[in-house]
Image (tube, rainbow, N blue to C red; front, side, top):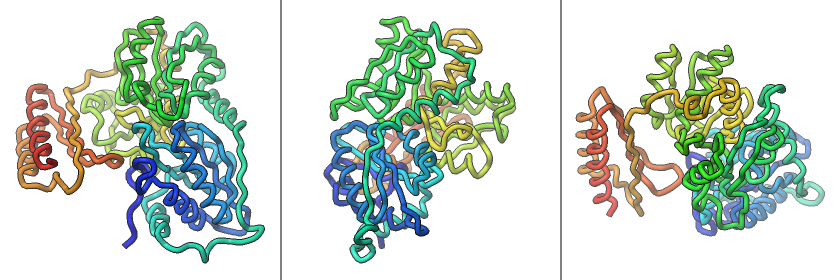
Length: 448
């Protein structure tokens, strides 16, 4: 049986440790090249990356794999994940690759694959690629003039800049707004501040000095304290925090308070519904989104469809049922009128458009509902299946009984790290805390 190399967001792990090795990366390129080698045209792949030191290693290995498979390679350099998805379509590539571990520490890296339509691959196609990785593919590689070529196309960053600007109404300007942006020393460090400046904003930028090892370190959407301090220091109207590959965003209001993805989806959904732009009568989110969001949408006669955790599952549901707004509490916002994947910058621009139109401060415009008390804790484990032990299952069952119909309990393994996430929410904050602590205690013992 073939190994399953793919998690909920591509292949991910510690760089230079299986499966995130140069050897596996090369085999992924060879395998994906075979799977997407259809017809007799010159096949092409676009490859973007974030700013991790190991991205150079993975990039070169994948170039070797794709060119060996007869695929021409277009190297984009550091580029946000949504830009890679957009350029995969724009350049009529057969496949797109983003080398990034997103919000993970710099020691990790990952490989995300996109089809020619710019969407992340289905489980079926990922399984097909995974099934080839451990095979001897030498007999299926072309020779002579059929071997692929590689070239850098760094100038295509400006295609994405113009694309992002065009998602706003032509007459909208950010003149007079002071915007602080934290690019997490990641893939958006060049494009995001440039877009905001060209739209007229007074831009204060941090997290724009990548050195290969400082991506996501005390910065970006997973560590917003630096941005909060900067917003207060420079009295910015709004703060924007991207993650390492710029496919997620969090907002900081003028008071220094965080606005998460649930609130951002509420802002966009309400605005688009008022404009007649919201399709399918609601939005798509995951099982982790706050119950307060669901209640807010119900009051607006809008529905919330929930999926498994992972933006790919949100996108799949959106495509199947005709939604054009979806996302995750973490700040992955998918606006399918514009993009095929989460886009932190474009989502932030949509928020800025609503703020500009309403004329009020971000603290008012972006606080659409009162969140239900929600607690999320992580338990790290080394091996085994601690979730399956009798004590843990008993704690989970007891927790569900205690919450009853007035709350929700979600326990799930992370798809990208050796973690088990325990989330509970309900109107009684004391009860929610107690339920989570009991389950975390049982898991910690089982993990030890």
